[in-house]
Image (cartoon, rainbow, N blue to C red; front, side, top):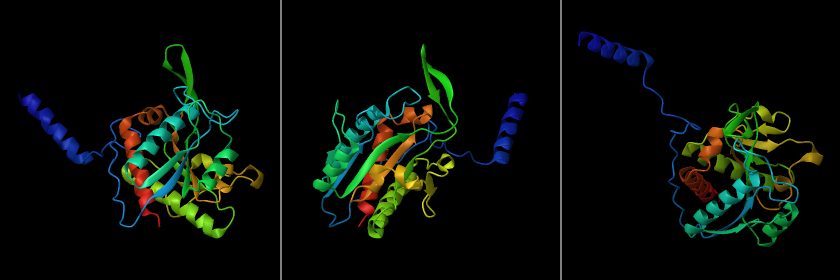
Length: 264
């Protein structure tokens, strides 16, 4: 009994020395996310949101995740769920860039968004970054994995009229702010050198800095505010698994509602 009491006292003393333990943080499987959106302000009305399910264009299926899942499959599933969540608020009309088994060129998507016309264009994606290694998520299945660069990023372009650029960056910052507040991790941009520059105001926001001929079409071409939401690093098995969870997608939808409600 004296030995057990001594061990308990030692454990208590060690806990006091180490201080309070921090709650698990993203992308830990135990990390919690907020699923409560901000209230829609009076007079907000109805906004039109064009949801681009990234990739799914001819010859462009996107990346493969740590579980060897095509990006175009993930983005369509996410766009469908997000669209339904936005519509349920009664304050958003939603149009998706493509349906199942459809391959739609990006130029057609931009034209459709402009003709509707949409108030904003959100292009949903997953990223691939970090040092890769092979692993087997299932027997006889080898995929690439990296746990060195988790997190989301919001990408925008300052090409064109200054007023449009200001609306793009405001949208990117609002989305990044609400996602970070919900508990998602903002990517630090270590792998973005020479391609995207970090924002001075909001972690997780980056402006396109590719050579002019290589800049991202869906960022610079639309005549309405558009951003790319790199939801996570698809090579990080922890993130890829969490983004299949209903709780994660509900938290993301709440973040999008919060961000859009904050825009004027």
